[in-house]
Image 1 (cartoon, rainbow, N blue to C red):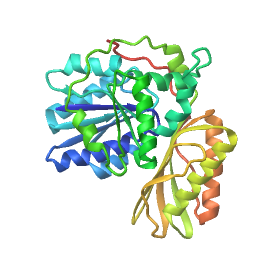
Image 2 (image 1 turned 90 degrees about the horizontal axis):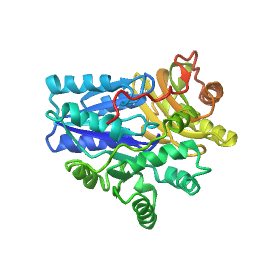
Image 3 (image 1 turned 180 degrees about the horizontal axis):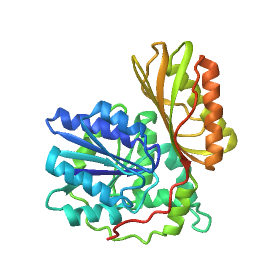
Image 4 (image 1 turned 90 degrees about the vertical axis):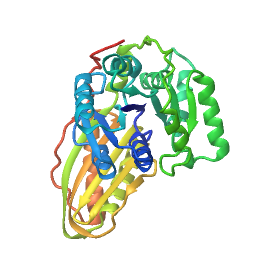
Length: 360
């Protein structure tokens, strides 16, 4: 059973990559299972993956490193019951030190049953352009940039996603910059959205990791501080309308308002993901930057009177400010479309301090 671990900062496109790669594997005759991971519950990614692929499991309440026993239980179930050829597993986007806390323990405890593929860390080129200049002076490097740098530093494969949004010259420039700064890694560029370059990445997963990585001197104080800069929420709510509204229009207004408001307030958006399910289908969209354009994986414009919403947001602000921001943006989307979002359920919190079960 080939276990493919995916890391990378929030908004890098891990779930989209898992789905696109999973379809490639299934098209070639392999059976595929997926493991999603989050600090909370009610994940948009899980529902999206379940709608696209077969067996989907969750590890919630913390990263794989802090919930290793839960990850191990899923691996054991897959080994004994589902027997997939490939397992695609995405770690929490604010997690690092995966080589020491997840990859080596999996090889140590499950090496007879698993071929653990090289650790692949996905990169959004826009995020890279924003954070990499902050590495130049160690004395002033922010904790969030420190975390992002360590994610890339431990990668066997660095996969630059969203290449379809750049020109070939820009893609080459980013790839060269990443390769120079992280010479130990295989660097590839691809687009999970279009599939360009995906075959090269998937082929690398059949190889072995470098085996040269040793436990990094990760400053867990800074790592924990970086995670604590992010407010985290997974919420659910019901939309109702006395007339009708188009789910995709409601989502477009919600994310546009949220992106604009975050930009005005100087908030860093890790990601905001929304999935709306109505009797006629689903709409799923993401926002990966303050002021950025929302991207849609699914769009439904058929008018409806009812719909169920799951919203996941990771934003650099306080939990109270994030909850207030979401409330204002929901009200704006309601007013623009004639919907009523009613009462929200779900927690707003900061991630707890990372405490891995194993470190090898």
